Image (tube, rainbow, N blue to C red):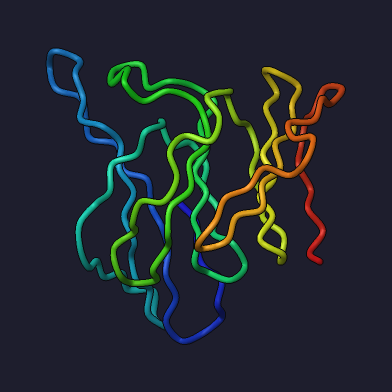
Length: 161
């Protein structure tokens, strides 16, 4: 789950949902949904869930509160259509999340973080790569030279600019 951290009386959060497995071990595809959180911590839901093309493991909303990055380091063991990778969605506060990008990389992504200048950073421990994108609500551009090779990435720290 990820929150928009707007520090207002009403906030919003995105949640990855995985449907329970049936007796045969099959599952429905994972999905993301947006919830509104009021001052007292009550949750309300408005709209539909949006299916992802990856197996959501971590998520983060950009500082502007309008983009949601979702990453996955492994495939879903039961719903094998959704693998590792990185995908970005339009985050609309209490309104339903909407699609934006296809899978930006199929490499397993271990950590993701945004800075205040619409840059998304994603590390892959499995491939020792750092992916950097400039992602605005209207465009997605890999930063020149991305992905960068790292020597054993373990964590990702992004200093707000």
